[in-house]
Amino acid sequence: MFGLDDLLASQSDGVTLGLVILVAILLGLRHAADPDHLAAVTTLIAGGTDRAARRAGRLGFAWGLGHATTLFAFGLPILIFRAFLPETVQRAAETAIGLVIMGLAVWLLVCWQRGLFHVHLHEHGEGLHGHGHVHDTETHPHGGRRARSPLQAYMIGLVHGMGGSAGVGVLLLATIHSHLVGAIALGLFAFFTAVSMAILSIGFGLTLASRPARRSFARMAPVLGVVSFAFGVWYALGAQNLLPYYF
Image 1 (cartoon, rainbow, N blue to C red):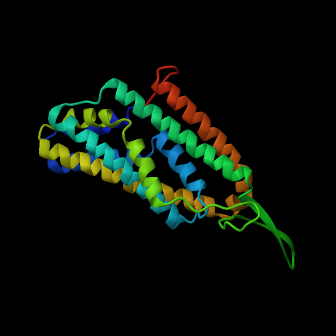
Image 2: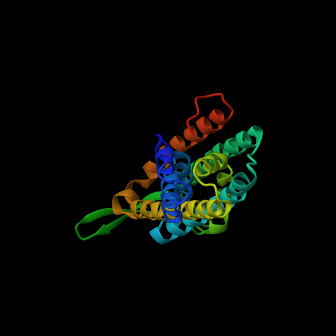
Image 3: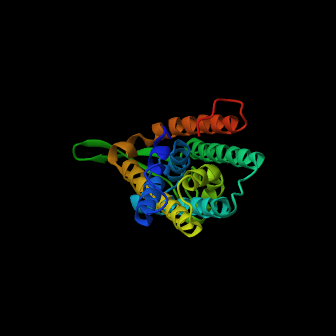
């Protein structure tokens, strides 16, 4: 993104193991901030019934592990055999990522439309106060839903990890000549993407759990859903070369 990956990768000469490891970690931490990752994980967390920071971190880390699994599985053949995914497969994977983002956005909008995000007014001594929360019981008159599980987040991450795997392999192959060192670097890259996504998700969870966000989340949810859906549409069309594509 914005040439930062190339800058980080250029710092490794492919010989010094410590430097290669450091670059792989930095790439992993940076990679988690890609807009498509943030769009997917933000709607994943916001669509849940429990937006506490700890749960958000678990969902983000589970997504990251799924992403790491396919990233490593598809990246390793690139390192060892120079076997890149066919362009049609890569394009299909990127399109699938756009569809996943769109699906998460639609689910968030459905939850909002069902009234699962709204504010209750409670009277205290000094007047009325609004407390925003999410209903998570099936007996609630608006209808309820169970929170998304880490396994579901992991499966979404599996799909997401297929996109961009070839690009990651190219960055590492540019400077790493040892298959063993390259495999270690790729594994660290994948793992620290998951760690970074967990940290970012905790930040999202803390933000969504704050009092101002709880009070206004019923108004924020449709905006977040529409923006994420539009981004997913652009991402999918960009993968098909129908719109300018920057990732």
